[in-house]
Image (tube, rainbow, N blue to C red; front, top):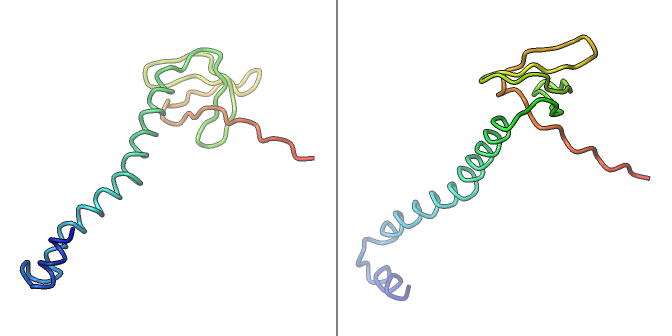
Length: 105
């Protein structure tokens, strides 16, 4: 580190322009750690959830429809939302049932 500051003071690497590649690498690392990595992790978890869907699972669609899975196909599932109402939903539109919020007293 001392070597870099000595070079900058003497003008050995062209002023502050020599630190630009280090700055860009730092920005790329930050983007990877805070944006790309969590997104890919979330996508893997959602894919694993969709592959594990079975008959009887309680789910919610991205539109907010709650129901229970009656049948699962390769790309879709039939969700029973009422006694006589069944909907065919694409697996990509299915989310796990959210945990109920704790009741505040």
